[in-house]
Amino acid sequence: MQDKVEERSLINVLNRLRKDGYTYDFKVSGEGRLCTMEDKQTFGPDEVRIVDFYRFEGESNPDDMSILYAVETSNGLHGTISNSYGPYADAKVDDFLKQVEDLGKNLDKKDK
Image 1 (cartoon, one colour):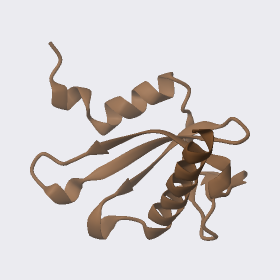
Image 2 (cartoon, rainbow, N blue to C red; image 1 turned 180 degrees about the vertical axis):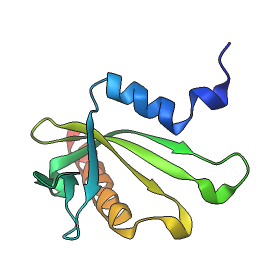
Image 3 (cartoon, rainbow, N blue to C red; image 1 turned 90 degrees about the vertical axis):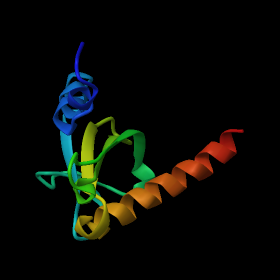
Image 4 (cartoon, rainbow, N blue to C red; image 1 turned 180 degrees about the horizontal axis):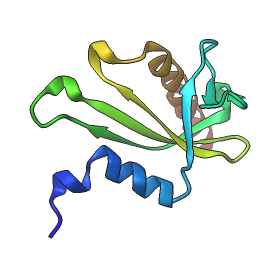
C-alpha cells in the first residue's frame, strides 16, 4: 500500500498531470497575463479555465503551503501553475487566478 503523503506530494501530482497532457508550465507576466514560460503566448483571465487544483502543506512547517492549478487556455494548451500561501505568495498569480475563478462563477450562473 502506497503512503498517502507520498501519493499526494507535489511532484507525484505534477507527474500525473503531465501524463494526462498538462505539459505546459505557466507563469503570470508583469502585465498580469498568463503566459508560457517562454512568454511566446499570453492569455487574459477570460481565456483561461481552472480545471482542478491541489493544495499541499509541509509536514513540519505550515509556512510550506502551496497550491497547484491545472489550467487550460482558449486555444487548447493544458498546463500547470503553482503558488505559495501566506507571505511567500506571488500577488500577481493570486490576482490573476482570482479573476479566472470569478469569471468561472459567472459562467456557471449563466449555464443554470
